Image (tube, rainbow, N blue to C red; front, side, top):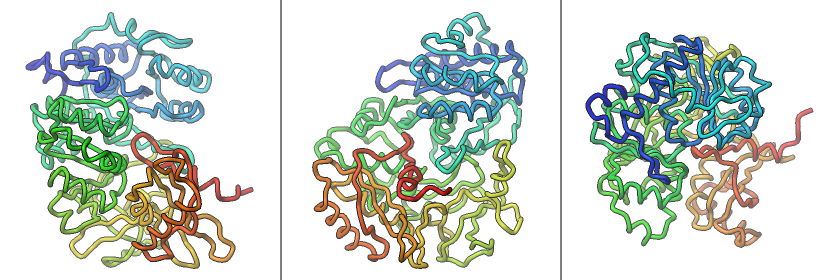
Length: 511
């Protein structure tokens, strides 16, 4: 139930295989590396309940750093490697990190925050050194490879992406339980996906994101081997499944779309028969995309809905999804309520804000106002991730959109996700965002911003084609009135679209 236990019986088994370089980290190396860093934390004065942070690319030792903090009983914050210096400095300072770990590849932004993060006592750099940073390799080399005496479980404290203001740190309650204590997520994974020590788990997304980090660590607890992609490439992902006999994997819908748009001959080139569970989350999946994935991969596509906050967990397997197409599942953790703006519960099929009750509690670190804003207006302790949706008569949840992205045009609520789902499947569309822009008469009108498959296609002809394509599948009022074209949309490597950045370009600044 942790790397040390696996290393004791299978020391040379690969814990991590890096997709591009082929570098292997064995369970012995993972255990010893995390133990040495844990001892360094103690030598620096960190004790259970203290905090460290790290910003790394998908590095071979990423999970060793995470395990070191976890087995030291620390709060640990994995930070996006794509942040600006101001964003990075805010998170490192806000979380109260006393140790900060980065890499030579990210040295430019890592070194830029030293003055703005005075609480940091020790700065370590992998693969090189930089001003203000000690060599990670030299610092841990003299430390013992055995566990620290007061070993206990820590917890991640991850931050939202900050697309609507400053990022929010989700602070869970620290259990300080023995390291081999299984958590709720591990038990859900075992129950739903039946992994074992023989499993091979493909992780195509950045490891600093909540789902990849937590699932990778959970699979390592069971002795599974991870295949970690340095960056996502649709054909390489298929090749890795074939090469390593991948049994489990986790995706986001944009990855499905990119794989589906590969030529048929390319998709047919790889043997995917080893794959038993393809898990997806992070964003709602367009119904046609999921239908085509199940047709291609078989009934092995599993979906869940949850957030970094951990306040609930919904799940739907392939059989139930085919009977309730479009659902994100029914709750396995927590109870779902759909409420209007005043907090009143709504009956089935009526759209409202999705709240969870009877699940784990959370707070946003150091921000009581943000914590209160995620709670229901009637003070029942229910919490929301900010999504809009509805329940059907059997209790299956369907997500409509983010509350903050709903368009109100002429007093009518429009959910841009519907148009995005349609346009994403057009063969000339590589990526798309739909949102509201100012309209003097209607208040807002629907706008689409499209990344075409080739910028040579961009122009009035494709604009008319896409609007007509959407109108042939949705009510006209839900469809864009105009389309703009971009070479690339601002999308996080995890698949999350920074729609706020696009939307703000079309709205006048508020004085």
